[in-house]
Length: 316
Image (cartoon, rainbow, N blue to C red):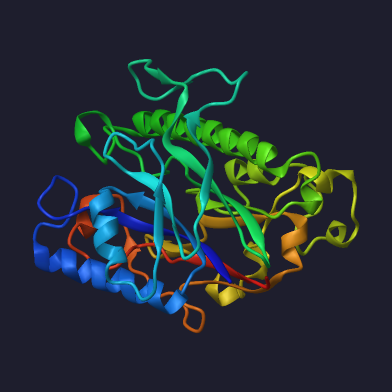
């Protein structure tokens, strides 16, 4: 079964302030997204940037097979939210945007305004059949794309850029902590025996401090000498599957001409041995992605997505 994550890039119906300008551009976007999903044939696909639930329903109508949609109740100020697309019935086990206890609110702009909530909710679901079971959480952390007062995407000066980059970093770290605390609950007392996947758009690469918050105790990453030596930390660890992706496919977005892997899949120890393949894009094709810049409106009428799916194939 294929489990993965995909940022659908501003999935809205046409005519609003964020979606395509016309139906032709909308139909082209849906057709491109549907073609990818139909080739992936996912059992469970975590989704980001679902701006309009009805637009996701329009996409589902174009898919082969029967899929169920489950969405978070906590969108951001533009209506963007996370969700799951699944070909099995799922049960929601968590849906939250709150920062964990003990973490103080973080500053978000020059006015001194703070927040104690993630920009978008974190959603966790579970499914169980006669042959397998799985719990999965999907998230979409604060973007590195900076916006400034008045709807600007360019700063007045480098001082302003530095401040707003710091605000974004603090918020992304707090959101990562919230996801990690939820993961602890999903793992239970001993994550070595659990089948838990944490996936989504982390808006930073595998080596970034915010991404590494999700891993838990360090020292046992895939590809390191400690990986084959079990220890007490394994009970609370999550493993980033990035090293299992072929190097030439190890990217999910292209920014200013530079390939980067900012969408991730983390799994518990039991699941690593069940992974038969890992990749981005389509199973037999490298991702063909546009290079994106700082202005998100530039791709408003573009088909498809500026992200590639990131996925694993598991034995049941």
